[in-house]
Image (cartoon, rainbow, N blue to C red; front, top):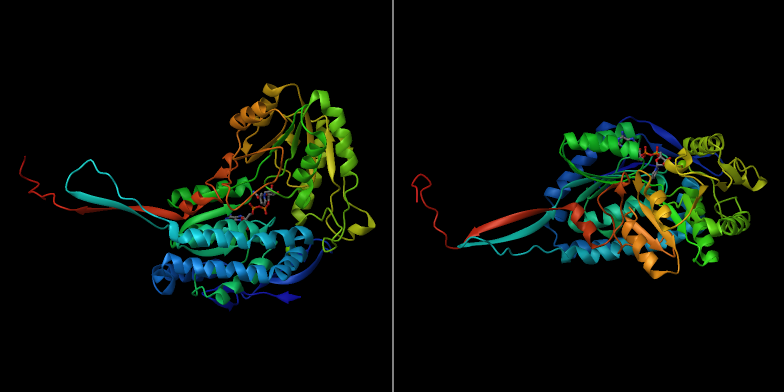
Length: 492
Ligand code: NAI
Ligand code: MG
């Protein structure tokens, strides 16, 4: 077993509790690492270290250009260590090695892009309605950021938060998911090597109700950037609201993937498959509702089944494995429960519908790629986030019907439209209630493209130039250039 340590003020340290908890490998079901069980005392130490780094010392004194240099160096170090970070994640999370290699090779781009942006954050001079004044704005770091991250793509989703936060000049305390903390702790070591001053980036591992809640309530934490379930997001937002803290919330979805009769059906089928089965369906942007126009419904389902049937479950370290295990035991139970719920609601199991028990699945937490047909949009399987390899196929009549069904859900993270009709593509992209709309593609994301939720899918945006604003606050400075300050008690 590998024993990890907390990372506070540039040092590895033991948790105040003196205790560690075990992290399991989802493919073997066995414990492989010991993760420090941080508590409120560690959260406090990390928040203080971050606050000190924010307000005094080398980080506070650096020019934005110097911050950018450090960020680009960090990007280079991530690229250098991509293979070992990827392997750690596969072990801890059950993600496919192929997917993790792709992610780790891509993550440096966030630090290059936002490193470049660090010294392009500019205020403006204000054309005032008053004579005798000169006024301008400054954009200053919002303060210490608590990044609370989930288990599905720990390092990628962390990069989405911290790259713009560092560009803005903030300092950070991360609380990774208790199920997948190892990669974040390994990643933390690269900060020193890149030359970041101590305290700029801190990691406190432990449980949500202990470390997570302590950070949310900590008076030195100014902003909470969260990705995870909408129930936890709401809880955090309530507390943050009471304490008047800034928040950014990315809370998952129930995204519609809409196939019209004029689509390139083969492409749409591949899009549907990657939309739901990539990362074993454990993605916020999973295309978990496949809306298919009646006239092509049977053909789409037939092709979908033909492709989905070939999916190989197995050891996520093996390059030819296509579907890995579910990451956590509670998630495994949750996905299986939703399969039972869908059956009880009257949906038809067209594929899968149970545990993965093939010999290649070993003792892992596998769920078969599952496709339900005959789903109606009022069923729970169509309304609630499953976060697993479970697809609901729903029929629609025409464009209006597709839109009504697509938007009739409380989430609004992403949506896709498959059609060759450019007018329809534009009409749909205007009317779909989602933060991202794809046309004839699925899952495309980039550091350059703003990402975030409509409706219950969240608040704020990640990625793109504007994401840096999420970590800034604006100050207006007024300078008297000639206006007389008269006696206020003398009426004029
Ligand atoms: P969660 O929302 O409870 O956990 C996310 C993070 O929040 C973890 O680091 C956790 O320790 C922390 N946390 C939990 N309670 C907290 C509290 N009271 N105060 C502060 N931090 C707290 O999600 P969980 O239980 O891991 O997964 C449950 C469901 O959430 C999944 O089935 C899925 O539907 C959804 N989910 C959505 C994700 C997304 O990308 N939007 C990612 C992961 C899960
Ligand atoms: Mg684990």
